[in-house]
Image (cartoon, rainbow, N blue to C red):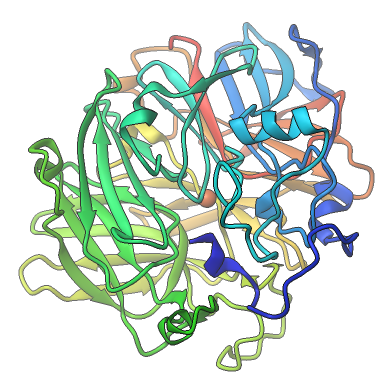
Length: 493
Ligand SMILES: [Fe+2]
């Protein structure tokens, strides 16, 4: 589906020509080349203290090109680099390491970039595919291993902890011709991994399940009218939620061999419920019940759950997802963009009414937020809290604070980061005491990496999730570029 992300089908860029510098190659986004020693660096808090009842490892993924890009750069093109902070007994230790995918290793051997990116017409004959699986997007703990996942669908890579060495392709990969996309999710109740994969050729979308023992349980095609830009899924006890979003490659242009994405404001977004029993039974065609919602695009869902006959979904809705769309309403504030992707997301709730088939939806806030996380132990069932990075009014994507939403009460509170500092996705880390199953949903910490844009100084922030207060600011002895998704791996695992 990448091809559809190209800005236009305008004349092909010369892949070898020096490129104009993209803002996502500069400043706090600029890649770093250094990898830490295997033993990492011990860290010391400069404000507060690392909690003694915080035991586990925070790992964050992101785009970090190893070599000078061939042609125009898109932030999604870079190689995956992992940054990890291991917490134990009040101490913290930092490591970073590239995700050594097959594509990364081929370029390493060549000593230069071999693949072009999203903004260059792809070489369809390139061995290994027209786009490099960089494993740069997401991280997921499943079946006793940490997986690095790529947004476009590809082999998942198994990552060793605490070293961050890439073990290789996760072994269920061979059974999945298109791999799996970022934002696969582990059901905390069953241990199953639920995933999607998608592409430009039929089946345009598949949904699957992998057992806690890493065996493929089911893999079913979802009937769609054409290729679609996918990014996330959600699940409940009995369903996987899939999406037929209103921003897509323009079918009329596709018929002429051109790939241009367009927001179709007259085409409802369909939210589909796939029964998880169909996956366990090995059905090849997913029996989907579709619900029509007002047109939108969404990168990230937060959670879904069943409420009687209804299914409730909470996520970050974007109504106007493209830069330069003449139908976008004027705004008197700055909205960030990544190339032509416009990021104006708002917390939103959809109720899919089982009895009537209609959708009741409501926007829950007027403050832009993205990269939401929650206590993952509540994934798939009714959850109360979510922790949403607040989108700064900048040209590029930065988060200047965090908003904690209480979805049960309909309230929120915000914590602004220190002036000039920007944080990332926050993972929820349960406190050590007691059995996690019996703990309150927000009894724990939030961990993120923040950067001071002007200096590149980087710190680990540890927040008390309940109070939404910073309890430790821990400098990292290296710059950590702004990145994507993170995972918390409790020490007990
Ligand atoms: Fe994502």
